[in-house]
Length: 289
Ligand SMILES: O=C(O)c1ccccc1NCC(=O)[C@H](O)[C@H](O)COP(=O)(O)O
Image (tube, rainbow, N blue to C red; front, side):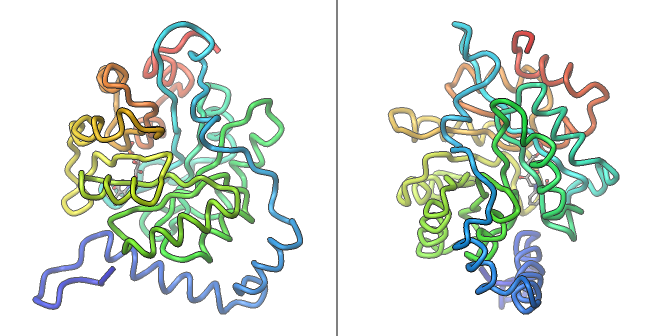
């Protein structure tokens, strides 16, 4: 990925984040204690905490025991964003994770990018610790702008069960390599796409969990039809389809349920909800948990 166009086009937000994250990763790699060979050694010593497999966990939600069709929730911890600025800058990730888990979330997504999202690996670690002892705990997703194996090793050591891979940020060879590395560490990635071409690339690497981002990362506009337009590409396939971004109410979710979407990823609406558990139950139209 470049940091903008040579012809003078301003860099997109994704390009800006990528450039900053490259600097951050270089600094972490050069820091004694977190050099790549040290992370490798910790992984080889078996120091990463136990993980749970994403696919079966994502298939379970409070409605799956009933006969009603349902979809699962990936609940996001999001302090701030490039499009909205501050959302909940002083949120407590451990308390938030516990609320999400008790309300029936299958996955807790934690933004770990510090500059635009005000997140951190500590947020993710605390979210994991808060739910660790629960029966059938949610899977923990490292929501990050991943371009290097190093970030995946970090994710695993800090307690993630899965990582995000954004197709638009990666060349196909890079996507294939990072996907294989995550799987080798036991983590099935969430592969994010925004159009049919990117969906074809995700399917080519063998992604089993694909998220369609309804948010255009160039102008931040949200089109809820982005996910609906790609449903047919996975209909007969062994792929779980997730709708990402812009989900605000039960009417959004109902449409996706009818179309056969398997999960929704929700950030801002959950972070702003006054009663998170009530909001989730209404959003997903789940029975009592
Ligand atoms: O949220 C943004 O403004 C954003 C901008 C640029 C890159 C990524 C961005 N968000 C990351 C996400 O994927 C969302 O946090 C996630 O899908 C939840 O979206 P929402 O429910 O609309 O908060």
